[in-house]
Image 1 (cartoon, rainbow, N blue to C red):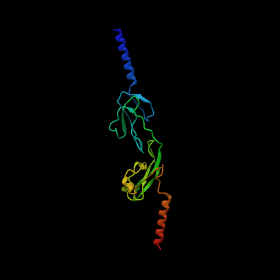
Image 2 (image 1 turned 45 degrees about the vertical axis):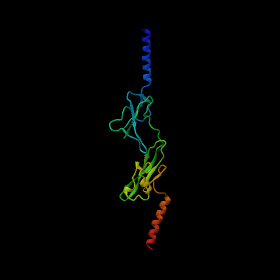
Image 3 (image 1 turned 90 degrees about the vertical axis):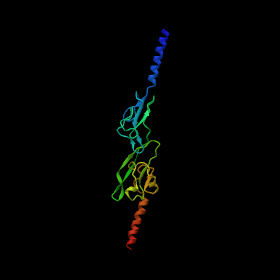
Image 4 (image 1 turned 30 degrees about the vertical axis):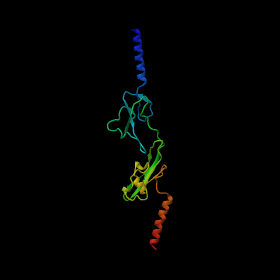
Length: 193
C-alpha cells in the first residue's frame, strides 16, 4: 500500500510539473515587445497590421479574445500555445508619400507627406492621379497616397499611377512638365499669329 501511495504521489507531481510546463502563453502589453506571459485563456489577441497604414490603434497585446466587435477589423486572435502566438509581424522600414486630393477642378498635392508602414517583405509603393484623371471620380486615393493603385481599371486607363520609391509621387517628371509648358507656350504664340 505504501508503494502505491509513493507511486501515486510521484504521478501527481509529474502531472503538476508537466501541466506547469505546458501552460499557454500570450504576449501582453502595448507594443508586442514583452516575453510571453502565462495565461489561462485559450486565445491571445493583438492589433491588426494593415499594409501601408500600420497597426490599429486602441488595441493591445493580451491574453483572451478581442474586445467587443473589434475581431477581424482592428484586432486579430490566435489559439494560445506554449509559445506566444500573438507575436507582432516583422515590419520593414517606413517611408513617405504625398497625398493627392480633388480641389474644385483639379488634383492637388498635399504640403505634408504621409508616413507609410509596411511589412518587411512588402515593396515600397506610392500612388497619385495620372494624366487622364480629369475629374474627382477618375482617381481613387488609397491609403493617403501610400501603396499601389487599388483600382486596376484606373491604372490601365492612365488615371492612377504608382511608383516604387519613397516620395516618388510628388509630381510629373521635370521633362514632361517642360514639354507641357512648351506646348502651351507654342499654342499661345501661334494662336496670335
